[in-house]
Amino acid sequence: MGPNISEIADGIYRISIFVPEIAPPAGFTFNQFLVLGDEPLLFHTGLRKMFPLVSDAVSRIMPVGNLRWITFGHYEADECGAMNEWLAVAPQAQVAHGMTGCLVSLNDMADRPPRVLSNGEVIDIGGKRIRYIDTPHVPHGWDAGVIYEETSRTLFCGDLFTHLGNGPAITENDIVGPALASEDIFYDTSLFYDTSLGPSIAPTVRRLADLTPRTLALMHGSSYVGDTVAALNDLASAYDKRLRDAMAEMSA
Image 1 (tube, rainbow, N blue to C red):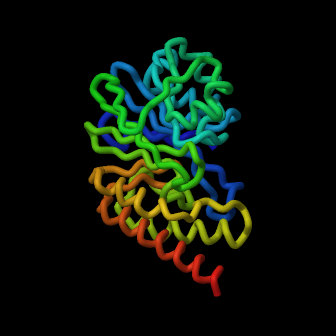
Image 2 (cartoon, rainbow, N blue to C red):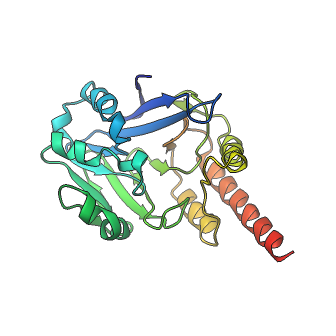
């Protein structure tokens, strides 16, 4: 299915590809985000095999060759599988990621040297300010991180709040319940285990709530413009309960 393009905040475009074969009958979306500015940024490259679809969608918004920054939540095929394809078509583009991601993967796997971002570092792309935030092991991957666009107050959540289906680009409906339900489906069917339950997960998600974002841009599912602070805190509380339940079960 071809990509769906939606502007979810001023100068921020969601490029969504729905794959009904994953987790049927609901299906699953893969979302990439283009942030416009003097130095445009792409968050998530998409799978390598999706590069023709995603690059065509970007070309409808801006010249692909003008892309300057490429970043993503962590080193994983759907997050950065097409990284080198993007570097090939955008001569000035550079991958930017946290220290762990660069040391363990990107220094070797990226066709051009990446820019190492420290926790809290801001890249001013001209009209937008992109803050990188380390979130190791949240929701998974020791190299995990998110970005926060300060001007529009958009938090790019990566795999947090992952939920099934091909919903609208933006929603004000509950996203915590669908995210937990989707995780239970993945667990029960052994499709994959999404979240690493550990002592850092709830505090990390609560720190993201302290940003008071206006929009939550999700990699899998609808972006959210409701009570974002409550959603993040409710997700943190749910993860905290699941961790405590798992520990109690192990000690029983």
